[in-house]
Length: 227
Length: 179
Image (tube, rainbow over all chains, first blue to last red; front, top):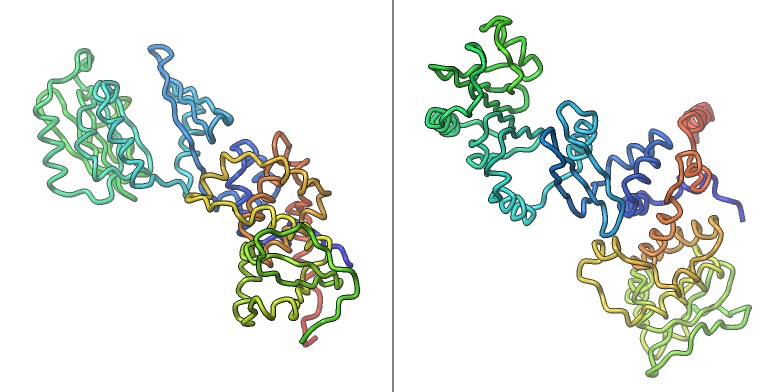
């Protein structure tokens, strides 16, 4: 009997996908590094996250611990500002096959009810449409969220909330610094809403050229660090 | 049509409760008896039995030839099916298997060299035995633990991009069916 060469390539694709599904995260990465075909294979399989643990370590930032199976390996992400691991985490969670099942939203709802969530000063979410939970995001001082469809009602709601809220202590360090900044994005455009000292302003910008488009109207004196 | 067995019948496990028995002939003419409960684990075989209209009365007189599976793999498969024929179905099997630790008996059964294991997977896929596929998957997945990409390439026999390209080039250079 002739030997099947190469053996791996003769395995049925659904078996390979089933196999990838059973691998721990590091093994997935190693398999995807074997070749382009294997990277495509791994990318075609959803990542299953068993649990997510958020841990406050210091005032600077917090750590996320993600476990891919019960009692399995735990990945730690140090989520300080501009930390490289934030982009690694973003890449992981924005995997094109990653999805949140409907019942998981119950968990999200519970998270939104926690004190930590209510006291959050800054929420930046990428590639996650939050239309259904839109209102739960409006309490923070700096917000970046994506919505599937930006409606007039939504916009009015944002403006109403921003108008009603008192600016957070210490937010007005300079005259030209926005007090509250909110960013709503869709696929190509984003709406930047800023509460200034005496006014609220909304600017439509191209998503890719947010800073350029915004600064066209405001010059370089404006600090966009808040958003 | 009945096929005369050339080798003695392999009775893998003595079956209880006077079950209906079927005969299966492997590609190398080994004959195996398998009980109805066990054979139902193979969707391919069970569909075949149903379509052929085999009954308790005529089953043993009509052995089922399986040309894609050799005797060695068929023996493993029959052993596995007999072992698990009374298992309860897991409601969420996929999620269950993620946390599942392979039973020792099954680990022993599947402790074979890599090439044999890959051949067994192909046979299992052909016979469409989901549970054995999952178990094989677990064994193959366990091999990947703490291995570098280089080691994985060797263990699984994964070609590199360069080898893939070379294979594609040679396939495109070779004359087609009409050439």
